Length: 297
Picture 1: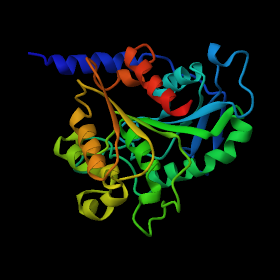
Picture 2: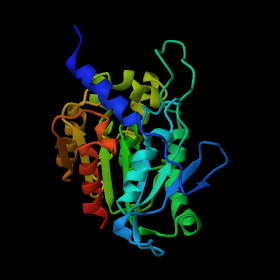
Picture 3: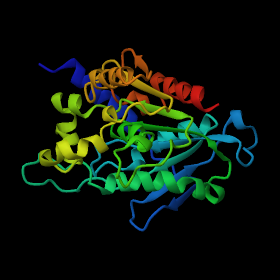
């Protein structure tokens, strides 16, 4: 007998990935590695009239998901980036180094993430963006920046907004909070302890940290639930029927934030799972756009 939840998840994934990739308006490198690149989408649609003037549109930085694994790159989230651009946002779709393309011994599939390269890249991309915008996306207003990301990318979005509270001595630590309007994390892997307990993405969190042997030493520098409070406005959007990253992960993160004295918004979307949050044809995607708008405009 088939599991209705699994069938729904497969159908939602197929629908989200059925959209053809959308080419960017411009691209720019933030490093020498082929994965150190950002694709830019200029704002368009009725909300920006005939075109956006310089520095007039809020910037949305998008970090894609895929369990930090190499087979999943930024192409699958380009329809979502285009969707946001058609809502009047300037969009930066960030690529970063992920795990190996090949299974490793003792692993069921490609290993998640690279330590420290995955974090090196997200930090470098965020730091480089203000300098890249002038030529690649002049319509963007960097003073109105919202970071969003889906699944593993939701983790990276939360992490990017928490660099000023990283442990002392971290190479990624910022001396002061980043200049962000906020974070909208979509079904994020936001609490590593809970995610590992639930087997999210086949133990991807431990793999991202380099394996169980590094869990205790590296988790304080990587786990959003350990990097609180941030002082950055944060909202989590989560499908209530998500079986990929179950709502318990987001709920635990929100609870950790509250314990640290910070309120994190948690929007549970009824009747949907993991993938409609980035599917432009799904009503859940409009919910995401509205959450971003509330922070950006």
